[in-house]
Image (cartoon, rainbow, N blue to C red; front, side, top):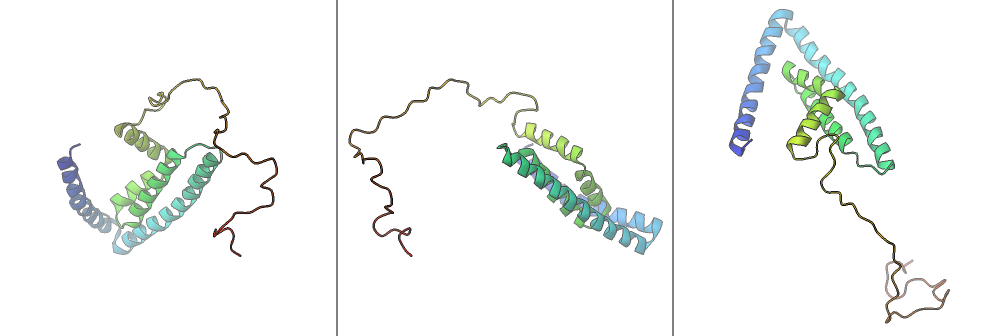
Length: 171
């Protein structure tokens, strides 16, 4: 997408979504009445908040497990971002935003959106090798001490702390 088309898309969304929400409020309110409609909007916000909290803790635990194993939790961070967006949509009054928010609560939907965005932004597709990996061999070499370095006899620095005006020297 070019910049101008993104601007038009955002403008259409900012104008279109509230109009769709108003129409849906009128249609649903006419079908079930004013107070049941208000109760339904409040109930979706409460139920959505509880579901987001439960899924948020699950995503956080998965990210911690990956960090403990030394793996980057990129997918988990995207799931967390999806939950934040779902929370904003569910707390925004309206049936369209609630529907989109509940869709983002489904992990499979977030995964599909994440893969789509990942490939659109130039990341490697799932199952494809990375282009930036360099294969090679190495040999560990211990560096020789510099000839100008003054060598202390073993144990000469034991028991001696930092010298001079150091923040480590202050009591």
